[in-house]
Length: 161
Image (cartoon, rainbow, N blue to C red):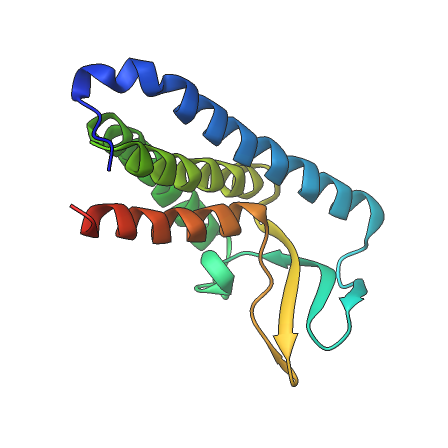
């Protein structure tokens, strides 16, 4: 495992910036395509019995958790997201391996993508629908995927020490 000293943080800036920007732009682009071509509630079967493209809106947190609240819950989630992004940027600065930097950058890019939705729309656009035998995982988006992959990689990187 390659270690990165704190002084090397600036040398890793390209990884950080490129990862955050790529996740953010891919998230914005895919959400723009979905909102441009599908009405809320529309569904396009991609792999019958397993995967659909849908257009749903999520006022809650990841995978619809806390979705029943009104405007106050949206504001609270936006504030929590902004604070989480600040904490993530600090953790990136303190990270000791490239894997940690990459993982935390994925999470940051995803959190930023969903935060923009919350601020602009008051909800998050979700469109990936995985299901099997009638059980649907809550719809999600590119930002959610990046956050999930980033969390798994972060856990791996912290436990590999």
